[in-house]
Image (cartoon, rainbow, N blue to C red):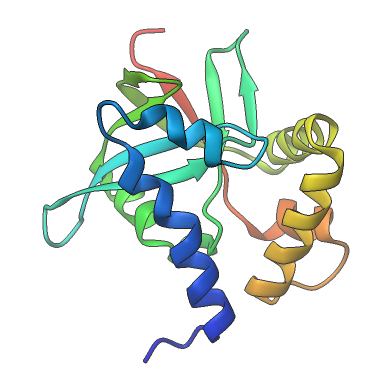
Amino acid sequence: MSGKSRIARVLGRTLRMPGVLDRKGARWMIQALSPPPTVLVLVHRGRKSGKLYKTPVEILADNPAQGELVVSPMWGRGSDWYRNVVAGGLVEVHVRGEKRHVEWRELDEAERRTAIKAYREAHPLYSRMILRMLVRVNGFEGAPEEAVVRELPMLGLRRVGS
């Protein structure tokens, strides 16, 4: 049995469900059923199995000027999708009905702080709930915003060739 609590396992399964809807003719339901922020679907290759996986991930910040989307693993550095991406398994992302080939980079603390600030401004009520939940589920200490900035890695995803 997993070391995570039952609530954490149920929450994780629930948040992964949009991946099932990432197929032709059903993608519109991802946006209709997702919370206010936009959800993208990461297509990544398993680092051990080589199998392709689709994982829905919330976009924390969208920077059109830089052409970069910011995402973060809810379960921290131990998240399977995060470990697969870092191991070189990122294939593409599906966002707003479009497939994109992207390259990733890890954000430094100042960039993570800016991304969380943009997320808080775009979703004032929803973000408070999500940040508190992340602190509780991951066992972080301190104020939710500061704890998430300090403890959770964030990735910037930029379209290849831009």
